[in-house]
Length: 197
Image (cartoon, rainbow, N blue to C red; front, side, top):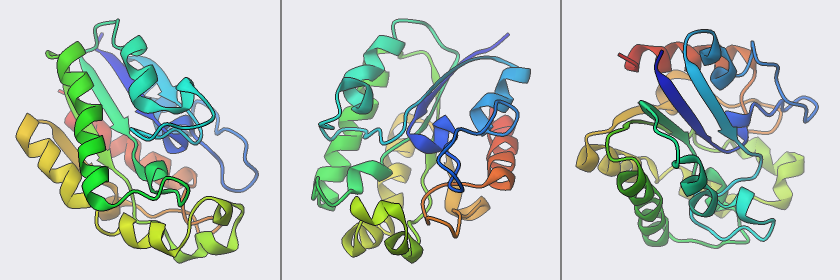
């Protein structure tokens, strides 16, 4: 049975935008993979990829990722980076690119033989500004989210990874403009399955 690490933020964790709960194992995309593979779910709400999150190491991708990579995985699936666009971090696109390179270099160093699938996040919707998450994201965050796809594509091409552009297959919830509803998790699950061989 293939061994898979699903590492990411709240959309890997399975955050429910309706009430802030966690979707059950049969709803969230990473949980559904457990029916088929040996899956380690490593999603965490508010986790950044490279920005030092004041909430601690578990919330800071590059700090906690090496702990997971002590195990050997056939596949590593990542869905991360959107939280680095929070207004408090104030990163520009150059910093974002360097930070994502730093994050994925950890995978190359610790798990050089794992196959990697990157889920490039959806653009943040304007209605996030009418939700609780307006405390974290602003208009600049939204605009930057529209410009980061080429960075994911470049990392994918340089490292011979596989990429799913979530903008092509799904949309975030109208509730908060950031998270996915159950049907979208189902779509993501189906697309991921196609890339696991």
